[in-house]
Length: 211
Image (tube, rainbow, N blue to C red; front, side, top):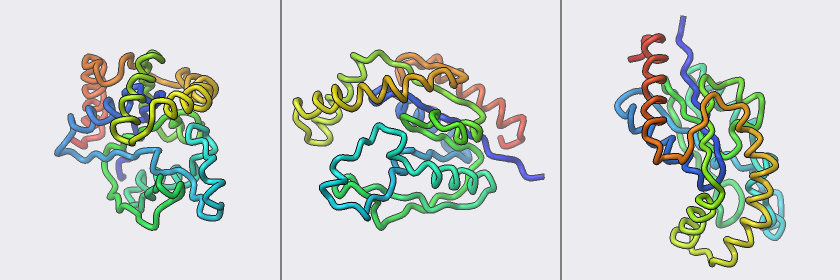
């Protein structure tokens, strides 16, 4: 009988440190059979909409994601079948023509702001994590990232945070904390929590005879 891969869901608000946690876990198993699947790649294709309409996309709302495709791809990976991960082009606000070939692995880290929001996704996970970081730290990290890496203005980042990011976080992301098996405060800086997670995953893999 073929073993089923281990699926770890890592959720949390924008700027919470969920990507840092995911990468820390990933790096701990480098050399083993592990992959990272980012929810951000699964925004819906909007090529049927005029560009002006695409500009209005609320990327922090559950309906922005093609969750059906994400679930389909995880189920394929669970059967040890390869997938073609979509690529989202933020410059045109729709899916690119490119895809990324992803080979199946024994550990799948699924990372994104809303990976715990859909019950169908949660049911595919072996471990559910929520990275819980204070709002003031999250907005500071978002400001630094969007201004330095994405060329945004201070006013535009604050305006988006107040009008979209914060209300969406309170309405959709924060409530998913209750589904988490483990809540990790302070994200990637919480080395104790990350070490505990790595140990737990190692135990699961040993039980499945992957290591």
